[in-house]
Length: 223
Image 1 (cartoon, rainbow, N blue to C red):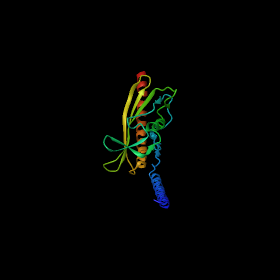
Image 2: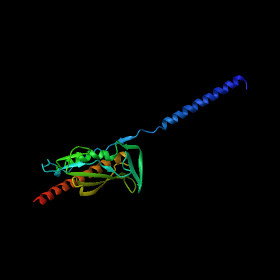
Image 3: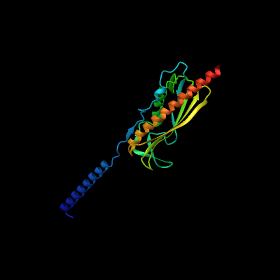
Image 4: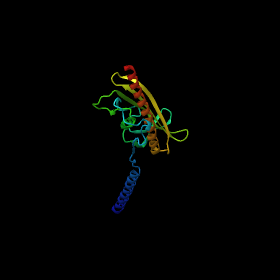
């Protein structure tokens, strides 16, 4: 091959390689993973019924709330959905800003404070002492698909304990199912907040009634 022909061949190969590289880079740009969207449990609609509200009496107990726990699989920032029983899946590009158990802690404090049944409500760790303690565990928080419009299920187990004796005074499992307005993560998050609010409202009633029952029992035993 003479020199002019060789030079033309080299230029052709170089041009072809340049075009290939540009196309490859363009393909990489279009295939970039989108940034995840982050969502919160803000408890905007949470609160105790107005019938429970009011200033606490001087004899009301102090309630210590331990940080909530979560069952295996529900203790991360991943937003869970299910399409088949027992199979947990995660949205690829949507997450909670914090694990749900951590986000739930301040919401518990706010809901229990609103009852007026406790002199103070304190989240541990704290140097404060109290007569009663609340232990909670998230059993499930999941967006369920299949069999009609999707829905979100939130289940919380709660134990009210006498702090001095460690005696379980009352316990209950609260479950709320709320239809999602849309079949996507945002619709599920909105439904999750409504489900959490419903459970917190019922939990507040439960704890307030249990605490008042303890006070009544102590007054009667002292007579």
